[in-house]
Amino acid sequence: MKGWRGMKESRTKQSIIDAAITLFNTKGYAGTSVRDIAGRAKVNAANISYYFTNKQGLLEYIVTQFLDGYIRVLEQVLAQHLTSPKETMLLTVRALLRYQSENRYLTRFFYREISLDSVLNRELVPLYLSRERQYFQVLLRTGMESGEFHKVSFSVFMVQLKAMLQAPYLHTQYISEVLYTIPSDPLFLGGYAKEVEKWLEHTLFRTAGLVPS
Image (cartoon, rainbow, N blue to C red; front, top):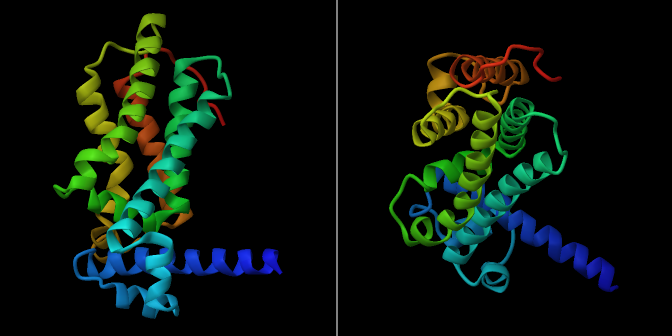
C-alpha cells in the first residue's frame, strides 16, 4: 500500500511541475495563478501547498531542478577523466546542448526567468552558476597552459558561449515563425551543435585534429 501511495504522490507532484512549466512559459509566472496550475494538473490546489508551500516555492523548486541537472552534466563530463582540454570542452558543449534539448520547456522558462531582476536570481541562481564558472575557468586555464587553447578573455568567451547555448530557447518564436524550423528538431540541433564547434575551433583551439565522436 505504501508503495502505491508513494507512486501516486510522485505522479501528482510531477503533474504539478509539468503544468507549472507549461503555464509559466505561455502565461508568464506573474500571469499564472495557483488555481491555473491546479486546473491544468487536475489536482486540488491544496496539493500545491502540500508539496511546495506556495507558487514561489514551486518556482524555486523548478529552477533548482533545472540547475541541479545542469551542474550534474558538468560533473558527469569531468568524471570521465578525458585526455585533453579540447576533448573536454567539445563533450561539455554537446552534453549541455543535449540536456537542454531533452528539457526544452524547462530550459526555455529558466532562461527567460533569469533575465528578470528578482530575489531568486540574486540569491539562488548565482550559487549554482558560480560552480559553472569555476568549471570553465579551470578548463580554460588548463587548455591555455597546455598550449591547446588560444589566450582568451574568460569573461568575453563565457558571454559568447552562453549566448550560443541559450539562443535556441530564448528565440524559439523567431526560429519557428520566421525561420520555419523547430528548435527541438534533431536535424536543427545537430547542425547547430556543429556550428558551435566550428566557432570553438576558430576562437579557442590551437591544435588541429579529429573532433571526438
